[in-house]
Amino acid sequence: RNQGEGADYLPLTPGLFSKMSGKMWADFQRDLSFLMQNSGAQVDIAQGSNRADFQGGPDEVRHAKGELQKILHFYFPQECDVIELPPETVDWIAGEDDRELLRLQSAGAVAALDRSNATMWLCGNPKSVEMTRNRIRNSLQRWDREHVLLRMQSKGQCLAVIGSGGSTIRELQSSTSARLDVDLDQWTVMISGKEENV
Image (cartoon, rainbow, N blue to C red; front, side, top):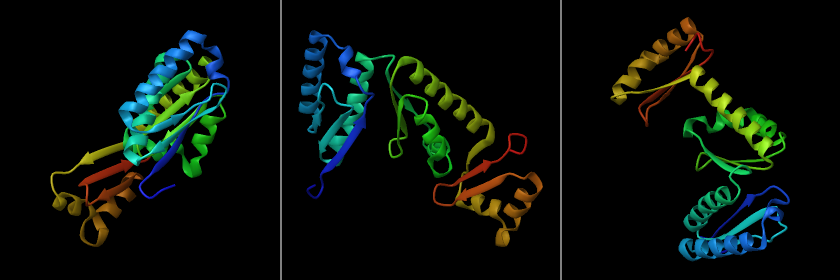
């Protein structure tokens, strides 16, 4: 790779393109050419392949990957989908040591988490994609019940939550059994724990 160049790939379910008629494949190739022309990235997909490869500048590759996901969803609305995640939930969806992500991937569909763009790419048979989509939806609902993100008005408010020598935050955590994470740069307080404690 040259300095400043980006490379990435998008995993696809095996045999995805075998469902396409000759005309549909030609239309798809035309859309792909248009995508490369507009994005400035090179996109390579062989008809029997289980991946799309991208080459070009990092921004061009990122843009081309996102656009290809939309194109594939258009051609395969039940087999391909992108789920946009709230950025703060990415690690939650992946789970500790990516265990939740591995569980999602074992459901029979390709499940690829793009941490930097906070998206989950799903590709597979319609039943597996729907099952994985529902698991993610349920996980996000659990996140909402077990996490609250408070945006403070000033750094001073964040410091008040921490208290002198950390006394206030320790008392809050002890009395509620919830965890508080204060971000002094973003002026936020994340409260997490069991639903009844949050």
